[in-house]
Image (cartoon, rainbow, N blue to C red; front, side, top):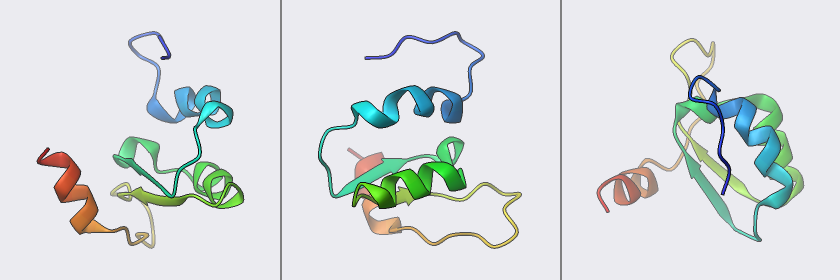
Length: 74
């Protein structure tokens, strides 16, 4: 569990959590976690990113929308 200040962005808190991630096949996060460095860190650990792209990304990166919907509806 990570407690952070209320105004801290998700990406900044992800820096603190990346090393603590348990073994996983896929990581599902919202667009607040859309950062190239995070995607690269996940690939290095063999984890597939299921992260929706931010609206300002020049070329949106595809993600598994079915997985995202299933989790969001749970």
